[in-house]
Length: 496
Image (cartoon, rainbow, N blue to C red; front, side, top):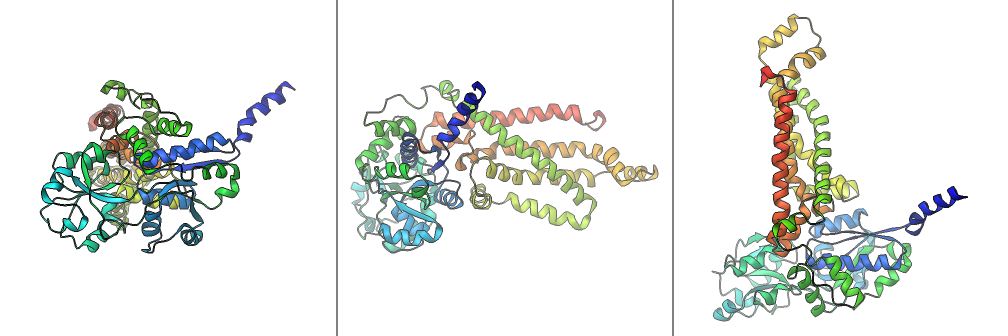
C-alpha cells in the first residue's frame, strides 16, 4: 500500500501536466514581456506545463520554430503577419488573415489592445533645426546619416518599401542592432533610425517620431500567433488567454518596457506585476556592480549549458572529421571534394544555418545548436588531419612498407603518431572557435553565455553584456591552455 502511494505521488506531476504549451518570444524586451504574460497565464490555469523559450531571435527564426512545432504560440504583430509572413500588401482583418494562415496550420487571435508600429525617428533638437516633421521631409536632406536595424533593412515592410514610397535618396544606410541604435543616435554617430512606437527610450533620448504622412506602415496590432490545435488541445488555457484581449494599452506597454529597458528588471517580474495588478518590485534583474552581475544566480547554469554545447559538438566533430581527413589523405580523388565542402560550410552565416536547421530538425534548443557547432568544427580538424598525414616524409612511409606492416597497422603505429601534433592543433582550434560561436545558441533557446550578451545588447546594459562576453573569452583561454597541457601528455616528446 505504501509503495503504491509513493508511485502515485511520483506520477502525480505528470498527470497534472499531461500537456505542455511552449511559448516563444523574439529578441527584444516587449516580446519577452508578452511571452512571459502568456506563460504565467497558462501556469495559473494548471491545465498544462508552460515552457517559455525566451529571446529566440528575429522573426524568421521564431516563425520557423512555430511552423516546425518547436513552439506553440508567440506574440506577433498584424503588419508583420500580413507583409512579412504572408507576403501580401493587402490590409487583412483577422478572419481574412486566418483564412490564409490555415494552410500553414496556424492562426492569429487575442488582440492584446495596442498598436506597435514601425517609425523613423531623430533627435528632436536636430529635427527642429532642420524643419523635419514627416518622412517626406527626409527626402530634402540627403546629407543625413541613417542607421537602421538589420531586420528592418531586409523586411518587405521595412526599408526597401519606405525608400520607394517616399523616394528617399539614401543609398546604403548603416546596419546595426536595434538595442544599440539609441546610443548611436544620442552620440551623433547616426542621425535617423527605425523605432517601435512603444519603445520606452523615445522619451529618454528626446527623439522626434517622424509622421508617416503617406500612411505607408500598416497597423501592427499585437496578437498571439499560434498553432491551430492549441484551442482544442487546451480549452481552459485558451479561455484564459482570450481574457488578455484588449487588456494592454500602448501607454501600459511603454511603461512595462521601461521597467525592463530602463530599470533593469526581468520580464518575468514585470509580467507578474502586470497580471497581479500590482506595481512590480523595483529591484533590478542583476545586482549593481560588475562582480555581482557576473556571479548572479544564472552564472553557473549558463556555464554548464555553454560547456555542454561546446564539448558535445566537439566530440562529435572529432569522431567524424578525423576519419574524413584520413580518407582525404589516402584518396587523392576525395581530397578536393571533402576540403571544399567543409570549407563551404564554414562560410554559411550562423543565424542562417540555425534558421535552416530548425525546420529540418523540427525543434529548437540544444540539438540544432550542437549540429551547427559540429558543422563549424569540421574544417579545422579535417584540414589539419589531411595536412599532418600528407606532410609525412616519403622515406618514413617507405620504411614502414619495408617492415611489411599492413595499411591499418601503418596508419595506427606510424602515420597517426607522426601527424598527432597537427591533428591536435586542429582539435584545439575547433574547440576555441566553438566557445565563441556557442553564444549564438541563445537565439534558439539553447542557453549559454549568449543569453547575457543578447540581453545586454537589447537594453544597452554594458555590465550585463560584459558579464557574458568576458566568461566566454576566459573559457576560450582555459580551453586553449587545457589542450596545451593535453598536447604534452598525448603527443610523443620527440615530436614536440
